[in-house]
Structures are given as C-alpha cells and as structure tokens.
Length: 125
Image (cartoon, rainbow, N blue to C red):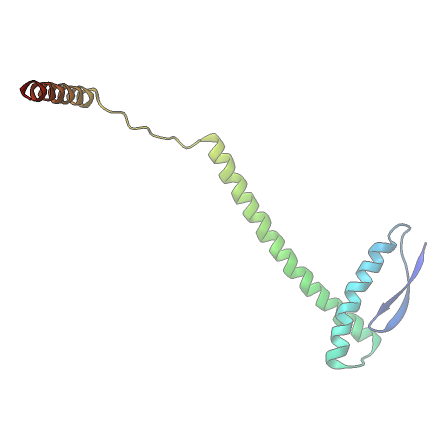
C-alpha cells in the first residue's frame, strides 16, 4: 500500500492509499489544505484535531451545497426531457388558412369586371 506525505494547514501527515489512487489522495489533500489555510489565516494556530475537523466541516458544507445544486439541475433536466418527449409525441400543428371557394370565386369575378372596365376605357380612348 503506497504511503504519501500530504501537507494540510502547514503540517505534514503520512497517509496510505490504494495503489493507483495517489492522485485522488493528493487532490483531496489539496482541497483540505485550502480550507485549513483559510482557517489558519482567520483564526491563527489551533490544535491539529480542531483544524482538521473544521476544515472537513467546511468542505462538507461546500459539498452539500453542490449536491443541492446537482439535484436541482437533475430535476430541471428531467422536466425538460418530459417536455421534449411530449413535443415529439404531439408535434406542433401549423395551421395554414384555407381561402373558402366562395371568396376565390368572388375575387375572380371582381378581377373579370375590372378587366372588362379596363377594356371599355381603352376603347373609349
């Protein structure tokens, strides 16, 4: 089992991990160190156990917030998937207005009368 030295809050710790998980341990230690550094800058030196506890709680709080955001995002995705499925099942119908035959006939009649009047005007000139 590989052992690594990690630095958290300016203090070194020897930690063992599973083979191949060294980069995960290093990343986790970096997150914990960042929180510990904030605490040390705000409060100053404190006992190791308290520093680790408070840093862990701060990370847990951030994680809980991210989990809430993830749940909300997943719920929104589920809503949108339902909307997409409904849209696929019931595609929007585009209504094309149909001109009634009576209107078309009336317009044709008016056009014929206009042409007849135009012909009469031409004859008179």
